[in-house]
Image (tube, rainbow, N blue to C red; front, side):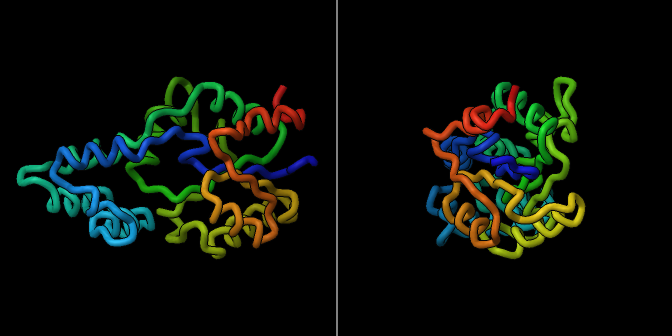
Length: 212
């Protein structure tokens, strides 16, 4: 099947991540893992609200630093939080650029300004690259004040894309590592695939003759 629109998630699909590195980094700063549990942790709640664009980066880092050891600086908080970002392999960068020559390529991510700027500085706007070399448009939770897997963010994205491209929801494929997000996209009429360690999306598109 030929897809006119391809929507990528960021972390776990394009960006290699390791949450444990961030947990370890915050532990060194005196912030226990219990604070970072998304079901009960107060620091995790700050991170969630930051991801939705409720805080500036400066405000976020100061608020988290206040929960760490005395003397912890906002810069140390930023470094600990960004340690989750391991890298974007060159083969993935090249594959996305190749796909962009064959289809409309988008990014849809639950992310925050620290992680996004880190990705821009190290990969998307680095080494001669520009973000527009990879994506026709970027949709981020921090900008939209919406997040996956809520239907509202998928409806906003697909409505925006279809209005610009004259396409239908069924013309779009969405790739995410989170099954809840995949199912939410499907409920909005979007084709969706869960990316797991044993699913290589580059090979998937290569088999469809999207990548030369």
